[in-house]
Length: 359
DNA sequence: AAACCGGGGCA
DNA sequence: TGCCCAGGTTT
Image 1: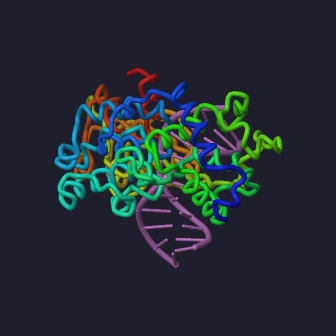
Image 2 (image 1 turned 120 degrees about the vertical axis):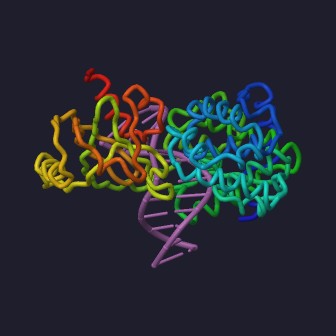
Image 3 (image 1 turned 180 degrees about the horizontal axis):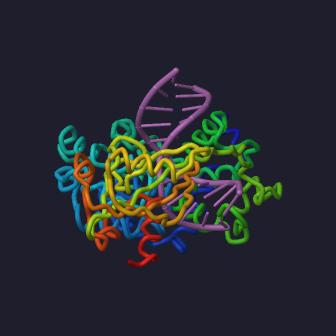
């Protein structure tokens, strides 16, 4: 489809949108800057994550790392510890790598064009477009979740938006609608429209600056678009989590930095099948490591990830000999420090049980 | 319980 | 290119 086939003129949309944005746009911490470092940081944090969750992290990051040089100069572990709780921990790894790339390959300056920006790990087509548009006012399109939903409705797209066909079409529309002027404001504005007006459920069409040209509204489909994709079932995985306690300290380990939940701390675990008996497995472990002490069940938690559900049975094991377990990636922490370390979400639930439990 | 969300990695 | 993986929030 070329632009002559659009159901409305792109400028009709962008003019209405910009006027609305001037009146009603949000004032977010990363909006009052054109510093590409700050814009990049906010965009990476906002991937897969809501604005409200990001704000505190964003402020804390900037206090610690006010420039790309300071971020590049720190250790990956430090970055991961600050990221704990935000999820998608590979973003923290990519953030650190990209900071070093900017310093070393781009002499401390973020490139302005989408192609160069996309060379940075963690920066795909949409994030590159956002940085280019927001920091440099270049005519670059984005397609984040908000924009995707807005376009699905504006054009009454009748297929699930994540299909590869739909994705192509949506990118084309996004590029066609992006104006040559005021790209910074336009880009902020269309994201705000999705976040404030063209919301997933019960969109506020009566307040929408594009209500006159919206094809979904015209067809009374605004409620039912975008179409949902097929949802799939996820398996359950089982583990035992071991709260290994010696005097006032607990044994924690840091997960492999490149893997699932990379760099997060956790209690040591044993993976299980649905059929195995956790108590038996636990006895086996205790005898394997020649541990003497008392094991008591603390409780069970469930944690849902996107592709599996985790069931974890937590045991408190008070030991009086621990030489085998104090090596490698493992580290002993006093109980009162556990709330401050970068535990992943599932094991935070287990820690909460331990803390409720009292002494 | 289910939907949502940008990008990386691999076949 | 198409598919799988990824984590916490919202509804």
